[in-house]
Length: 267
Image 1 (cartoon, rainbow, N blue to C red):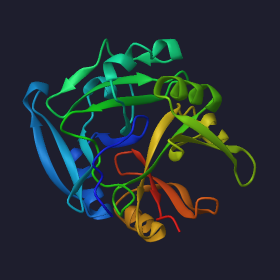
Image 2 (tube, rainbow, N blue to C red; image 1 turned 90 degrees about the vertical axis):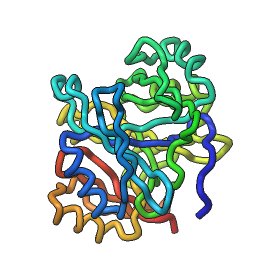
Image 3 (tube, rainbow, N blue to C red; image 1 turned 120 degrees about the vertical axis):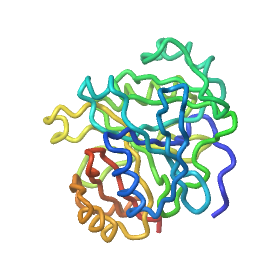
């Protein structure tokens, strides 16, 4: 598949893992996805090491040690989702008027890679907004070991969708789900780029907050899930077919407790 050279505004373009054991996570995901790594020491951030995951010669995501303030707040290890924007400084001024909140005073530069800000949508889900400089995000998607889909679970899909439409200019489409309910797809120029769905009742009962999740494409969902289990992962959702999308998915908790999805190639 051709390498990705750019992303349109409103498209998920990058994902990184904040974890409590960086070396263990690197080993786990290398075994799962076949990743190799490039370690980058961030001297201006206390010598934090930001590990770039490489798949098929392109960057697919990253892994870093979770910040102490997040640990103290009881935030578990997690995958972050970044959406590409054209002008992060301009959009940051419109987050609050669309019902969201900034988690920092203003956007900041990430060296010469890009410029970003982190926000919460009106339902409480965290999303990073990324304006590229030298780093567009993932150079590969929808191949084994790379991003296949990003999805928001929230208690109020309509409120969340209104936020992303108003801030980013994306559109949305709604589809019936098997067994009842609806599935919403955010679109850019008519192409589906991310999903939004109602938080399942069993997760809401566990007080799981609204959040974005990342699904990685794998050649064989069932075999990859079994491999993950053998390396200490826990199953959060058994493999299931999504006939409407022509895909098979599963969801797991990695050995450090971060949730991540697996998704088969589209038929």
